[in-house]
Length: 79
Image 1 (cartoon, rainbow, N blue to C red):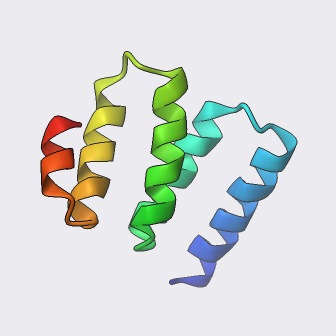
Image 2: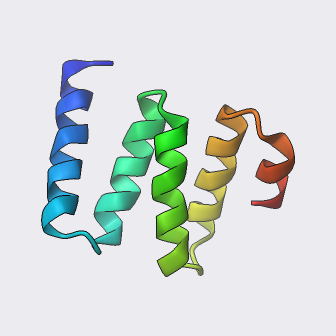
């Protein structure tokens, strides 16, 4: 994990402490967590996003990619 990514993760987490309902921050942290090789954490974030924003196909695509990272292939197909 690079230092800049770790710092970005901390920044996103701090931002969510201040603005816990800001979905764009959660989406961005999700992408970062996946890039950092933390798919379980990324999955939690994208599931929170999908509870609020249900009409954006890219969020479902991201969830499917995360599920593939976790080798949960049947669930990925359904996402």
